[in-house]
Length: 152
Image (cartoon, rainbow, N blue to C red; front, side, top):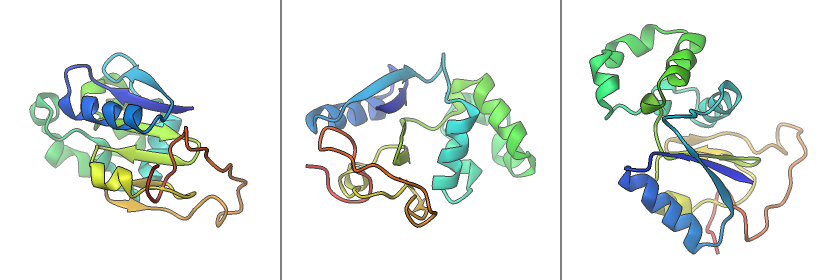
């Protein structure tokens, strides 16, 4: 089942959930502030975002600005950046959607509508499908998210 990390007062998160509900896509919601994504999910999302660590951070957050992360982030190791995201869920870009065959951060309806097929994608890029990497993949039913094409 898909996991979506959201913040209850975030309008973009509400839009993303409404989108998934309208498509009949099953998901489990997690409060991003209280339970940020674990390191393995952050790692998968980072891979889906072409290794661009900045894509995992909510640069609009007051916490991001207060910590001076715009300048600090490029100097941090992966472990240090992940530790910051784990310590403060406000720093994680949201919504954060992850499942067996999908990894999306942020919500842009056109992008989410364009997703289908076995490709991990995010707002800025995609990686080779698991089948290309030699991994076994499952076909997603219409009740699940279909990465890299239209959802119907």
